[in-house]
Image (cartoon, rainbow, N blue to C red):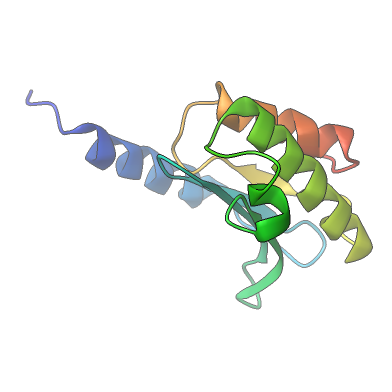
Amino acid sequence: MARLNRAAERIKRHQRIRRKVHGTAEQPRLCVTKTLRHLHAQVVDDESARTLVSASTVEPEIRTLISGPNTQAAQVLGTRLAQRARDAGVETVVFDRGGHPYHGVISAFAEACREGGLRF
């Protein structure tokens, strides 16, 4: 069987995850998007198709602290997103890792969100 390239395999994994993970008003979806330089995260209510909270390493206050998608930037982003989500009244989320393995930057982000007060 021919192997697809890494990007296509990640998209297939993400589609497989999205079949099972669905955000509601009570428990929205926390989705993570990773690029080579930045990390983006959103808390999304899929039923009303609305983004409740978002955070990214592109934001000036986070960008001045750390550059690049390393684990330190993921930790800062996770605590920032957890604080914004709690301010918006969100305490429990469903984690959508976007097809990326739960390792490195993704796991550092998730642990920082948990330490910030989000439950998933």
